[in-house]
Length: 74
Image 1 (cartoon, rainbow, N blue to C red):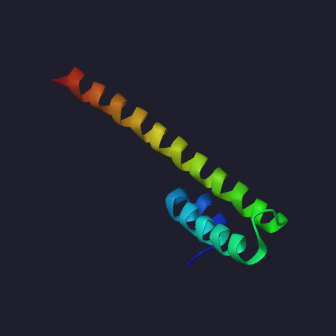
Image 2: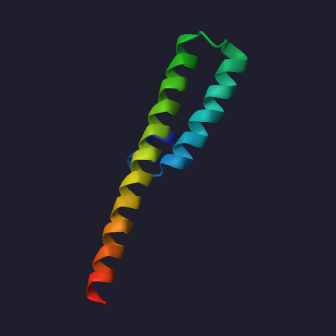
């Protein structure tokens, strides 16, 4: 499986977030919640989740616009 950063660049934000979450869980368990690598994982997960929300919003706008075009033809 590609690393989560690569998945994010490919637009696979959900899968990227899943891997970031696993890494965060592991680092929290092993290193503790305040370790710099754990904090980095938390930030990466937040970025992946934000990108996923943005993608869903854009897709929703596109779909609403497409429906409007289809209705105008009718």
